[in-house]
Length: 296
Ligand code: SF4
Image (cartoon, rainbow, N blue to C red; front, side, top):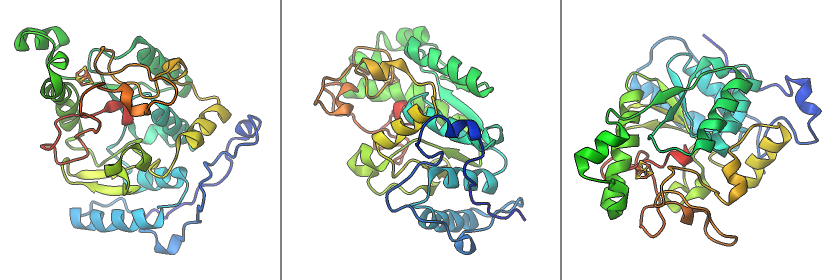
């Protein structure tokens, strides 16, 4: 039996010298977790029903807790086969820094979806993050190379409207990730409630029915300012495209990611002119056959 451990603050004195921003992300209304009410972690195998019940209880107890508390609980409850979905976007790099600062980054596998058309700046950010935190992210990719896909479909799918874009995302993101998640115990994402209307009720912990494993969304309640505050205070490397008008960074094609002007909807830079705004991996896999990895 491994008991629940509340995050201690701050474990790394060097971080306090960065500024007056607390090591922990502060959330309006944040409450202290009642340890007696939180499901205790066990190293033994559990039934799916037992995991669902524990995740539901954890979601309730941690709803207004700091993300570090959620991350620690996830790693303790699932000590093996836990993964972090990483786009090397703002959410991902902040989560990696939190895991590293609690010395639990090595407890999980960081993976990224390489569509074959990521920005050079995204790869450079990956290399900087890997060097800073001392790990190597696992590359997850489609079986088809980009050229093989072009040959098979007679051109670029993303130039064929919403159906082509959805098919391309399905081939290059959704299917590779589904294959990767087989046998995993849980995955951590950077999803947030404010990103879209259908994420408004996103729990911080849940059972992923599509992939049949646990799913953690430790940043569900956070806003941009809080995450950027954490990144800047802790000097976390981030994708330079954020400073060049890209509030959301996905694939480097004229259709899939473009810069956004001041005052425009931050999401308008993704699949501009198409009705596609939401990733499909969080739904039932049939409604929308796509995954927006920038929101991982
Ligand atoms: S974001 Fe664009 S290029 Fe990337 S997988 Fe989806 S359609 Fe293809």
